[in-house]
Image (cartoon, rainbow, N blue to C red; front, top):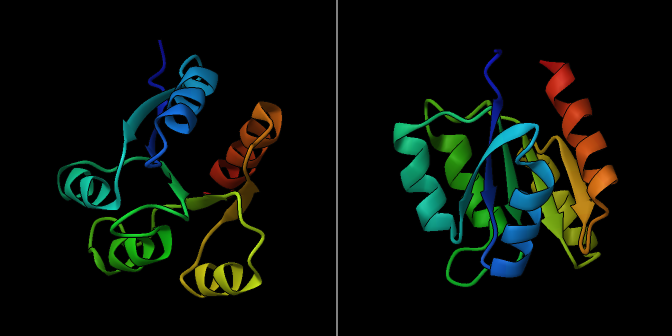
Length: 124
């Protein structure tokens, strides 16, 4: 049996996190974490194939978290798809400068999310 690709899902909204995990767990090994800090701790010891990162989170938002991920030696090149409910051009620009691989608006359609993940993972 082939090993599932690993996805780190970062969102401080437990409902969103549960939906992501529910939708993707059949095809991927999903690790849900509910804060940017927890994501950074996870990345110090683990290397997922992809990170789904919510933009709006308490304490450390998605852009701040992404900035730190890009500074980490073992995580700097991991593909990142940003998830957001805000259609904020500034956030898109900021995230793009940090090298995101995609952007999905919330509430997301599960098929759209899957399609975006497949597209990003095929780039490797």
